[in-house]
Image (cartoon, rainbow, N blue to C red; front, side, top):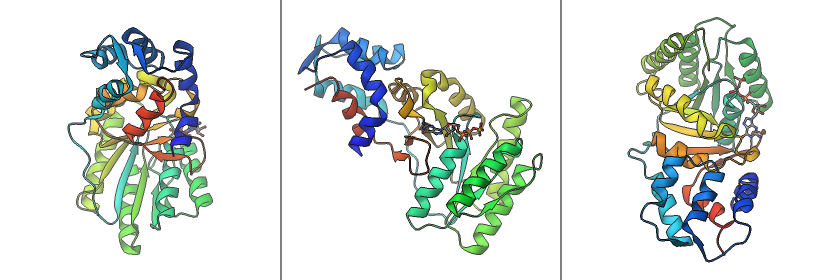
Length: 288
Ligand SMILES: Nc1nc2c(ncn2[C@@H]2O[C@H](COP(=O)(O)OP(=O)(O)OP(=O)(O)O)[C@@H](O)[C@H]2O)c(=O)[nH]1
C-alpha cells in the first residue's frame, strides 16, 4: 500500500525534489512553504499550515501540522442498509464511470452482490460505457434509453435489488444538463425517489473529483455540495499529476471525508485514502 502510494505520488515527489533536492532532519520554514506550494496546496492553506511552526521544522512538527487539515467536522456514519445505495456525482470527465467500475469491483471482491444503475441518461455514451463495464465485471445493470428519466432507473434498481437480495447499488448521475438548474432538480428528484423506494436511500452521495485539476476542482465540488449535500469524496487520476498537494486543499475547503483515491484506469486501481499514510509518503521525500 505504501509502495503503491509512493508510485501514485511519483510526479508530486519529483516536484518536491525540484524544490528540496536533499533530505534532512530539519528544514527551514520557507523551504517547507515552497514545497507545499509546489505540490499545489492552496496559498491560504499553506499559511494556515505554517502558523505556529518554528523557523526550522522537523518531521513530527510537519506531520502534526498537516494531519490537522484532515479533522473533519462530521464523519460519514457507516450504514448496514441492504441494499446500500450509493450515488456517484461529478462533472463529466472527472472519472465517474471508471470509478463506479472500481467500486463495483471492490465490493464484488469482498463477496457482495452488486448492481449498477445507469443514471446519466443525458448521454448515450455514458449508458454504453457503464454497460460495457458491467458486462466486463459480470455485474447486472439497470439502464434505459438516452433521454429517459433517471429517477426511473433509481427506482427500478432499488426494487430489483430488494427483490433479488443484492447488497450494493451504485448509481451513475449526469455531470451536465442543459442548465445547472436542470441538473440540480434532476439530482434532487433522484434522491427523493431513492428515499421513497427504500428508507434512508441514497445512503451515500459520493463526489468524484479529478485530481489533475488540482485546487481548481474545489469550486465545482462546492457547487455540488450546495446543491445536494455530499457525504464524501473520491479523488481520481492522482497517478498522473504533480498536484498531489491538492488533496489537502480539497479536505480543508470542503471538510468532507476523502474515501478513496484513483490510482489508474483499471477496476483494481482504487485505494482507500488514509491521511497519515498520505502525509508520510510526502514527508519521506523531505525528511531523513
Ligand atoms: N490515470 C488515471 N485515469 C483515470 C482514473 N480515473 C479515471 N481515469 C480516466 O479518465 C478518463 C475519464 O474517465 P470516465 O470514467 O470516462 O469519466 P466520466 O466522469 O464518466 O466522464 P464521462 O464519461 O466523460 O462523463 C478515462 O480515460 C479514464 O480511464 C485514475 O484514477 N487514474
